[in-house]
Amino acid sequence: MAEIPEHDRAGGRVLAIGLDAAESSLIKSLIDAGEMPAMKALLDRGTWSRVTGPTEWSSGCVWPNFHTGCQACDHGQYSIWNWDPAQMRLAYTDEERLTPFWKSLREQGTSVGVIDVPFSPFLGTTPGFDVHEWGAHSRVDGRVRISPGVAEEVAEGLPEHPFTDPLAQVPVEPDQYAGFLDECIEGVRLRGELATQLISREQPDLSLVIFEEAHHAGHFLWHTVEPELPMYTDLPPVAVPERTLADLYRELDRQVGRIVEAAGPETTVLVFALHGMGPSRGLPPVVEPLLEGLGMTYVEEGASHRSVLATVKKLMPGPLRDLYRKSVPLAKRSQWGQDSVMPAYDWSRTTAFALPIEQYGIVRINLAGREAEGIVPPEQYDQVCETLEKEFLALTTADGRPVVSDVARPPRGAHAAGLPDMIVHWHPAAFESPAVVNGVEYPNIRRAQTGQHRWDGFCIATGPAAEAIGDTIATEELHRVVVGALGR
Image 1: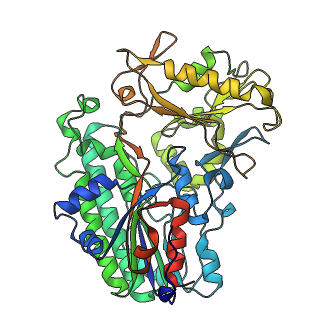
Image 2: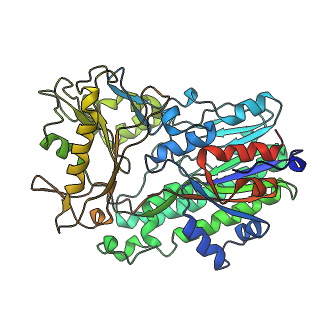
């Protein structure tokens, strides 16, 4: 990354707008077609850069990389649930553990306005504003928190964001896609209104505004972008509504234009996505059966894959279950229900085990000296990984095509728990035909999800940021461009 030139270090106000998981190729095509005029205007006076990041390990890494400036292997955050080798169990995400770069800026007198940076803590300080989980895609705490004063006043004057309701659902049936898209587009409009009013009234030195609706919609509506793909052929016509994901992107552009205008003509602007979105059709549930078939994973005798709480919830009448979801905070519900997230393993016999699947297959080795109950000697670690990689790459679909495109091993870093040992990336064929493990076909789960993360993002930058950013920038370096443009 290039340095900010000395003559630009006086700095000024900076506006950074994140379009979470917005796909750069679709953004570019809409700009070229004249359908995103606000973004086109920014690009005409700025630059386009490729943003790289740790999405190949997990999308849960990318925002912590951005707001801490650290590599994923050093901060250790990769999911809502992260493995704790000392306790031999999953640990629910603690957003307060990580320190975002704007905390020190605030302490040095910079006014900062923040709206929903995923996986970052709520600081709630002024001057400026802090809005946390107001219609978030990545809900961790499960409750909206807003700094006192102007931010509370503005938010109370707006309708509730569609995602804020604890009972808000994602589509599970084809006829639910249209209504879900309408909610996502309305969420973009409301977030734009919130940001425009807050920036107009507060005029902070730094404004960070993240539109999570693009991420939420992308996972369930990518088939509206490429409906001709073979993986979507069984979707009925009702699954492709009149409006498409491109309409949400057009609404994003309208709101970007409003926010940029509210920030003022002298403000340095960055509009970015840390990763993109592309086609998929659910997830192949093959990691656990493969490990079990190889004799690497053993569940405790008599243990159930379903927790007592999960069983009770399933038996609850609908109204009582809804009351539970409304009354008990998400973080508390998640912690109570963690036993249903992964089975109770017999660690004395388990050499490798699956962690909760989000997009890729995730494997952890039960390594002696790292895991509290580890049994794999360090000198056998590479051999175990190589054996597993070979087995994953040998998997085929029911029609004989590959299930897995590659198996990656994330780097080790400063964080004690670190990242998982192996990440299994799916071949496109796995979204078109069931995977076969030990002669058994395993149809994909979560087939209502028609989009998955693509690794690269983008950044449009103006002013001093455009001079500093270069053609390609790593996610963890992006905040340095922001701070440099402030002149701090």
